[in-house]
Length: 392
Image 1 (cartoon, one colour):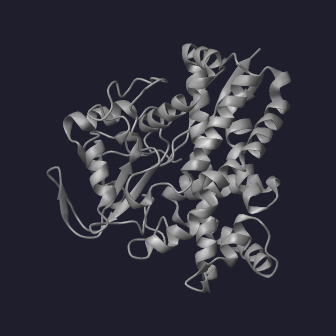
Image 2 (cartoon, helix red, strand yellow):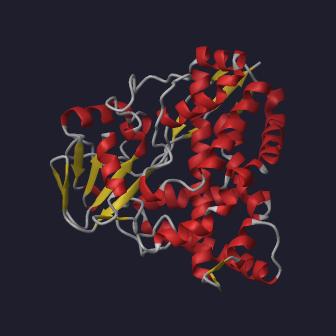
């Protein structure tokens, strides 16, 4: 990424692409909460950043003043590329969301768990004998990529394509809109043929379901089908691999937690919830469409709001010892999967993937540590992109 003008004041000139923010945003959010709970920057054509849980919640639930038609903060706004339901506002939002719910129920996701477990062990088999691996590239990034391909009945080998598109949309495309538009066009072309094929010969997969499901007696327009598939590909992969990578990073950097989970595996579900809170990967965005005021801050139409669920999850007013990871935390109403009408549809899938990924890694490799420089992602989804690990 090109060198950017340095930030002089995080409350009036923040930049989420600044190297300090990318490496360790938590002290920055603490400063924002203490000095100016809703920060603002003129960068990116004007963006607000609420750092308190209650302010994030207020924006997330207010669909009258804040629109979801743009959900990523970019240097320049791209042409609107629908990805329903995440880019939909009421009243269009609810029908688009309801269509996607059946494939992501707890029962539907439970059927995928055996494949997820087998996949994790196939990946571990490839590096277990080396005594070292890149926990992000060789493990975390592969699991949701291949599992989404499995759900769509597409070649798992296409995962490299998916990684490329994710980087184009969520990282490179933030500062170069043409890259994001190119990725959208490539995904459109990729899915179009598969949708037409499954309309004529449906199978038991996600593309077939969306291509043939009926709403009020009519099939979805093909643009809506492809938009939803594009959403599932982008939103369902990078977020989860970031979460898995952050879990492994924490356990490598905090051996006392790793040893405790190995000794007390029944704590894993509680620990996963705490990792989700402490390392929530996803920051969404909203566009201000009507002037309003929250917590003394006036939001002006046309500007954007970074809806940082990770910052909300670190708010000490909501979570005691918010900056401390407590793997047996009892009360944990975290916002890692969002708040409001756009709460993550794939939360059951993500929880299962994180749980299985960490469980199998600890089972096969109970003793591991960091082995070099960790690289974190740039943009609005946070997780390790390079995670060198060593083990016995």
